Image 1 (tube, rainbow, N blue to C red):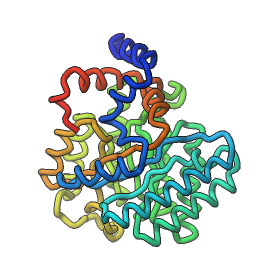
Image 2 (image 1 turned 120 degrees about the horizontal axis):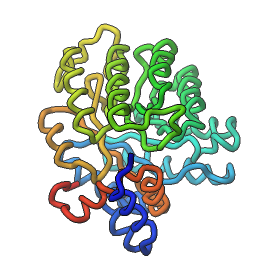
Image 3 (image 1 turned 90 degrees about the vertical axis):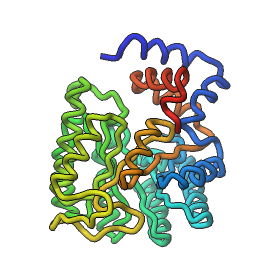
Image 4 (image 1 turned 135 degrees about the vertical axis):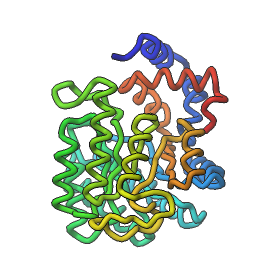
Length: 325
């Protein structure tokens, strides 16, 4: 259950003036422009971090709106190349029109992934709510079938179906399967998802184990100590770790700008000290960098969809020294 304190923080924040929300969100969102994201990545690169860049916005109303995201992500690719950043892309399929016209949306995604491939960049398809889980997985499969293997998806530990999805993708893609596994931000119905904290953690950990067993590339996207500690123990059990070539017999060759079969990922502004500790131990750590004009909608939506974030925001506001970005 979501605590009353978190709910109160959320209710208060969404009623605050826009300038206040911007002030709170500035540690979690790079800013409205691409150059804001570039500046932050240059700074965090000195800490050994790598990045995935997200242009904010999703579930557009007209297919024409998808052209903006295609152009903006092309600009991102150019900026990564120009500034020699260790970064890849995260895109939301609905921002490319997947729910409006699946064929047109797919063509736009393919165009972007192809351009990214020409620059040796990886593209992560963010996983949105359960309405598009199957469609997002199918986009990955369709792109791999035409030779665009520089793409993978996100799976959410809280969903009942996720272990089956891992098994299915292992069958279809083998070691080319490349995941980001997270608990999941969307509070899905109890008919299709775990709702208690411990059940979600247990399910996420089981997914990590299955991905590693399958020889897949596993991006562990979590700020939860129980998940991170479980992941570290699981990696050790497979003989995996910092500066060790992936020893799994069923894994594929290591990709450029990737870790030895795994990496840890965290959101900008969340658990910075923990991220730096992992990096100091030699683990590849990736920071999720969102930017764009839709920063306000992004900030409010994250709070509304998962009120437990209210406690994290309050802690960062009242005790910023405990969570330096």
